[in-house]
Image (cartoon, rainbow, N blue to C red; front, side):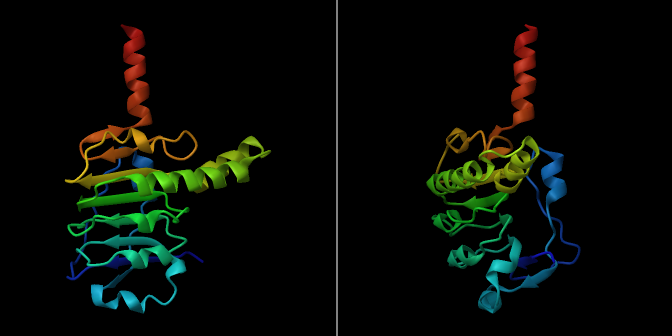
Length: 193
């Protein structure tokens, strides 16, 4: 049984299109469109937060702490985080694979860095002594496919989020992009000179 895919928005939109900021087509392909919409005043009606796997928030909210209880969340998209400054609610979402927060006032990426560290500990413990195939499965389960943060309160190139086991590709912080394929292209061009 697949988990819930929820959209939180204060307006109804037919044939909604979702902005996917990813450099990799694979990450875009893995995006799961929400199949249920709720209004901001109905957030408390989510009876089993741990069943939510995809959460898309298309309107600004006063409080995002309800996300902490979504332990199986793999995709989190916040398209309008104009009141969002603190993202500590992501620190224990170890199954999170896609994180996109746009129009925010986030002043630090420390919560994402802490999440990466937690994911890395789990990955190393789970993959110790594993076969190459099992190790790949662990990397796919705990690694990030992409992180996109747009904020007017913090400028970074995203390198503090790099982690070889967990987070090494499709990291975008404001106008800075870290992409494995882009790095490989640049390395090849440098070698050709």
